[in-house]
Length: 404
Image 1 (tube, rainbow, N blue to C red):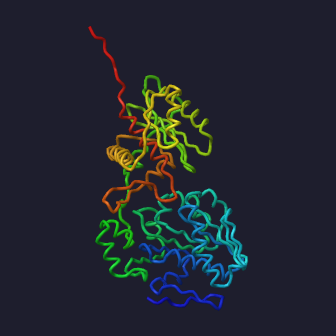
Image 2 (image 1 turned 30 degrees about the vertical axis):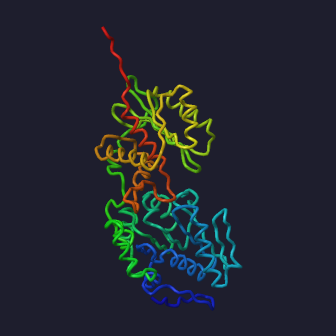
Image 3 (image 1 turned 180 degrees about the horizontal axis):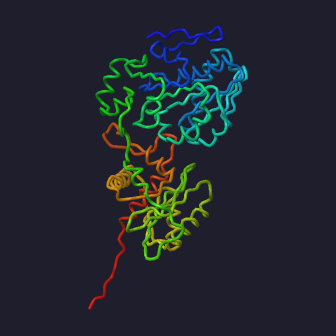
């Protein structure tokens, strides 16, 4: 499929494939594009953003992606190459630390991620591209609380491959939209699509290649809102039994501590923090355990967690150290999923917890096994802490009776 010429302000011309040209040239304010994998949506709408800014000096652009680590790759592989071809790159200024690309005419692009939405708040834009919308808009609050207030007057392109039914689907239905499948893409040979169809599950092929919104596709947990009926406590209730679940931070992740009622299986206490030293983290775990007079707990003892676990045992806590492997994680997550299906666990409506539960998903590997994880660029610390607490709920203390 031959690309058509796209007029720019430079003598060099950059083409877009004919199948996507109508969507590209649409002048309506908000347009949604759902497309199968490898249809060129990211490349072409990076080009769209550059062209809009090139035609309007001193204007503000926004590019939103899944995670911060992807931004440098996109700037290097897409934006830099395009701007070089247009003869502009030497007059541009890329600030890799602040993630700001200033163009030759005074326009600029702020790059942000769903991973760090707080870095984007407080600004307004003329043009915006929300990339990987199927992933980033799994968090409904990202659109409602962060993005829409900044782009309510902007020309916006919301692009991505569907990932179940979420805010991307509702926006797709609300605004002008286009849909492209792998069969439209110039980057697939027919035999490659047929091979994908033969080796992928029907659900995965429909979503990833045909760009269909599949209800519950890849979702692990149901009844998320229905189970969010609990209430946090300031102090333990006399006579109640409590247990603890802890997921420890890895690198930029968060340590999450949860305490639950051992009889009602309700989460009653919650703490979440990161970037503090291990000594303080241990103190917080001990303090929570002792405050609620927990009789038992399950904590992450993988990697560096093994040493933390030993220190807490030495401090007198009755804990099980849980080591994560692909097999043990699958069992842990499956047990939590079953508990939620059966309304056998409850928790307060903590936004970060319900967000993580809603976006947590699975993929089927080539060997038929399932892999559970949060989407790239998102955290799963809340999910893991809840799953560890759910395991702690199964603990039954040994009772002794007198022998006559």
